[in-house]
Length: 366
Ligand code: GLA
Image (cartoon, rainbow, N blue to C red; front, side):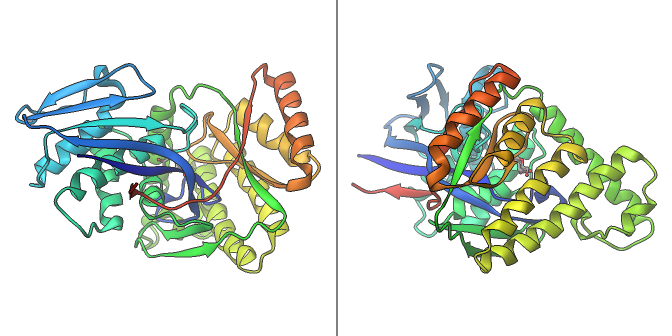
């Protein structure tokens, strides 16, 4: 018998590069994502296929599993299978066929979706009540240890725990979370895809994480803070190195912006939230330096257009996507103008999608 499962992509509304600094983030799961079919096999093999990639892979469950760049996208499900076996979970022989409708390489967390989907699907064969926050943490560890990206927990948590029409306010140091109704009134959340291939993203990402670790180490020589996101503006004054200080400043100011955003959203004050989005982008550009020419062109041009309350990059940066809050009457003109201006500035054709906020990982029953 074949079963079908789905895990969404995600956007982060605000609170960027705060998860691995123990801060507050505000992501939301999308209605687009990765679907997979699961069919048991009678032998000892796992076969991994994709409807969107020609590369496929097959392993024998008794063979050791290690990361290998030749394994391409299958490293993500392989990392999950490896860790499940290592922790003593039953992993059945099966064929899994993945199919994604997330735009390729766009930074909407297709890798977290594949990880969470694989773990959820395999565990569902033997367990009925999967603890989703635990599952998110399990997948994050696979990304850190097997894939080698020192990411925080935000993406996996959003993919596992998403709720339609809500953002998730997540404290990444305690995993305490609550849902914030994302009431859009006459506005729409648009995803703006730079279509810039995201090269060097993993090494740059790990570099930012190391810079934040260094900032924390310096602050801990004079204070007892546990996470960089707890620092105050006056505390970071002791940091001498200009680059490390800028990184810390982004973390401190972005943390304040998340709190203000949640307040604004609870009061249905989208204009204030829009201004905070713009300020977040500026901080990611000037202090954290993870935007780049294409994201800056897209977000900054969007911010100037009629009907747009705010725009910012979302996710890791270095290419990928931005998000914008745009009045629904202004959308056709916004799309037209932004596409034109972005093309003139970068020579690239952006893509613009209207996004809906959906639920987290689940089985799709026919
Ligand atoms: C990537 C990582 C997340 C998070 C964001 C930046 O998406 O996977 O853990 O750090 O970047 O906020």
